[in-house]
Length: 364
Ligand code: PEP
Ligand code: MN
Image (cartoon, rainbow, N blue to C red):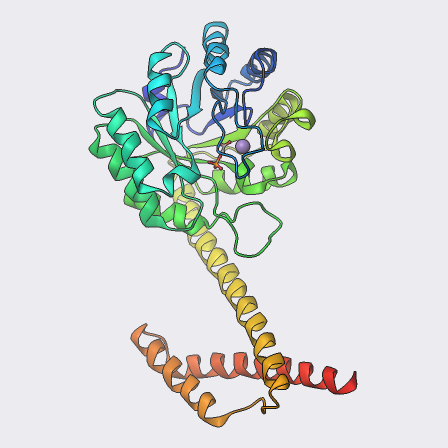
C-alpha cells in the first residue's frame, strides 16, 4: 500500500502520479467497475468521484449524495487506491469525516475557491483535523483567491495540501472549456514551492481529444500529478460526458505520455526554459484576446459614428491616445518609440475597420 503522505510530498518517488475516476459517482457498479479497471495502471494512486456536484443549472444531475460514500468504502476495501471527494460546504466535510473509511482526501472545487466565505467555513470545519486537502484554482483568473484559499487552509492547521490547476473560464468561446493560463499556475507554485501541483486536463479540455496535449504540457512543466476523469461508460455519463475517458483510454494515454526524469542539470535547464516559454505563450494569447475585444468595440464605434454622421478620425482623440499610452508605457518601463509604433499600428487597423463599415454601408 502506498503511503499517502509520501504521495503528497513534492519529492515523492511516485511523482508524477495519477488521480483518476468519474466526474460523478453514479451507481455502485459504475464506481467499482471503474476503480477496478483503472487500478491496473500502477501510476494511478487515487480514485476521484464527485458525490455532491456543483452544477450550473439546478436541473442538472447534482450527485448521488452520501450513499456514494458507501461505494467509495468498497473501492478502498477492494483496491489499493486512495479516494478523493469534492466538498463544498461544512455539511459535506462533516459527512466525509464521519465516513472515515470512505474518504482519504477532500478537494475544494473551482466554484468554491472563488468564494472566500465558503473556503473559510470549510477551513473552520477542518480545524484540527488531519486530512489531505487539494485546492482547485477559482473559476476566474484571480491568483489572490487561489492563494487566499491555501492560506485559509494552512491557518486551520491542514498539513497536507496540494494545488489543482483546472484552467479558468474563458471570456470568449475557445476550443478548450477552460483556458489553462499556465503562468498563473506557475506563479502559485512559486508562492508555495513546498506544495505539489496537479493538473486537471479533463476540465481544461472539456473534450477528450485535447487531454493528451494538455497532460503532456503539464508533465513538461514538472507538475506533480494529473487528475483525469475516467468513467466505465463515458457516453452514458450523467456529467461531463465529453471529457471522460474509458479506463482503457486512460491506460493508453498514460502509456503515450512522456514522464520526464527530474533532477538532471540539463533537465532543470529545459524545464525552466519551457516554463518561461509557456508564460510567454500564455501572455501572447491574452494579448490576442484583448486585441480581438478592442476590435469588436471599434466595430461598435464605427457603426455608432455612421449612424450619427461623424467622421472616423478625430485628431484631438488620436493625440490624446498617443500621449496617454506613452506616459503609461513609461511607468511600465516600456520604450517610448516601441509604444508609439504599436499604438500607431493598432490605430491604423481600427481606422481600416471603421472605414470598412462605412464603405459597406455606402454600397448597400
Ligand atoms: C470536478 O472535478 O468534477 C469539478 C466539478 O471540477 P471543477 O471544480 O474544476 O469545475
Ligand atoms: Mn467533472
